[in-house]
Amino acid sequence: MSLDAPVLPTIDATPFRVGVVAACFNSRWVDALLLQARHHLLASGVQPENLVVERVPGSGELPFAAQLLCARHPLDVCLALGVVIRGDTIHYQLVAEAAQQGLVRVGLDAKVPVICGLVVAGNVAEAEARCVGEIDRGAEFAGAALAMAALKRALTS
Image 1 (cartoon, rainbow, N blue to C red):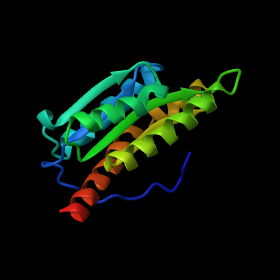
Image 2: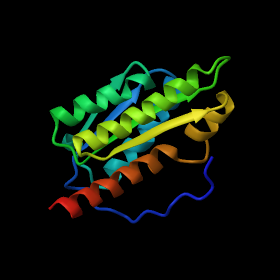
Image 3: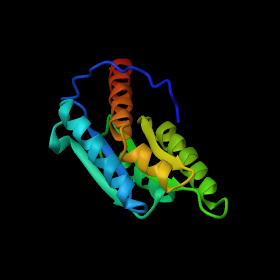
């Protein structure tokens, strides 16, 4: 876990259009991230009608869903939320790497910042600590999304 999180400025997100794609797999933890992110976005001024949330089966489906969302809606930013937990094989690593690489590609192709809000945990205790514990990881991902939406608007207007 990173111990040097950036201090992001307070952003008035009133004009921003935000898309969120969230995995259903490992729902206890993803739902917590989604709740935290939604709270932060709305508290920062994102209007409920400008917040689009779609659920997908798992983290491997996040890039395709983000791509569809970016194509369908004029978004300022897209936030992808998922939790991948290590099992007995390297499958978790393959899913996490593919999701992260896919999300980068979607952002570059769509010219929309896509925030990879993917928590990759070594075990259930780590997932619990990162998603439900004292660290508000969903709000951190949402803060990064707002910072990138502001940057996009500043550099493209």
